[in-house]
Length: 408
Image (cartoon, rainbow, N blue to C red):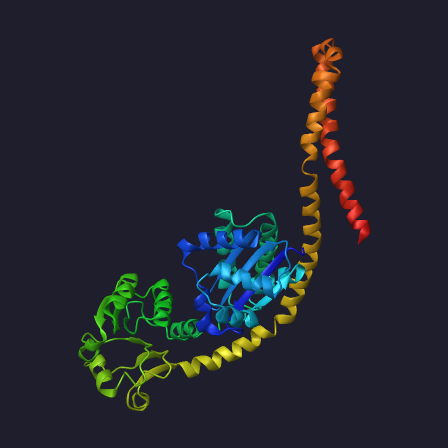
């Protein structure tokens, strides 16, 4: 396992802003990874990129020291200068051999994640592997590692409660909204079309809400979200002139001021002064504090949601002991799996060699004697040879496994 390696750059080591510098567009991944393989004499590679980490999983004969890492980064991005590469060298995290396997399993099991228990990572790892396999970037070693990684992560998510309590603000916002038992034909006004509101709309649409009006500074972004939800897109400048009322207001913009003022809120309400649900996911808040005092509002704020998220995260962390035990057992199991796989690879030539010996015996050494046998005798002999051929293939494998077991 000494040849299996992982190089990682995460939100903890270089920050979220720098993570983006490692992102490669899908159509460029194959050419970039093939260049790394060629320049670094790497036999297998897999590229994993998420919003908070980039990891290079690869098989190489050379030791991954500072010199190797510098050349690796230069091969990955030839535009990076010496200063940038040196900066990344100081912040890179590396694992080798069985420790690299352990790390990858922890990643897929969301132990080494920005948010513990976020199970999206298992899909991201699986997709990254399928991409590398499809494009002949990876090989047998990465295949065996990823199979054990995915199976272990599945076990973690099914046998522990590490992922059961939601901790993301968006999912908690929807859970809080769902408790209000609103009609699915409720009128939803969405202010802002960024990632947060887009994710919120995914929840709303998935669960059947169907009436949306999207306001955003960039109308193009509002139209993208409107197409997804089946709603109407409008520029943010039209918000003070909104007509038609609303039942749910979802707001999340980058405004430094309180965007939803009392005057705008009155316009949103129209003649309907009944209690409304307002989900404010912006930091700082889009909602003027006066509104909560002066109007009938069921307010779901970031502060409220974070309180729940912190409590749920504590519950998730209690499961870490169980999770780490599962991972430990999986790593120990993998050691044996990998040993057996190496035996299989070394001995896979045996079946062909046995067939060659049989062919030589039948067609050359004993061809004259066999030609004198009747059909019945030939049939019996073929059965005997088939039986012996199978045994000659399986017996060495069993003996090799027994020898490995005795060495433990």
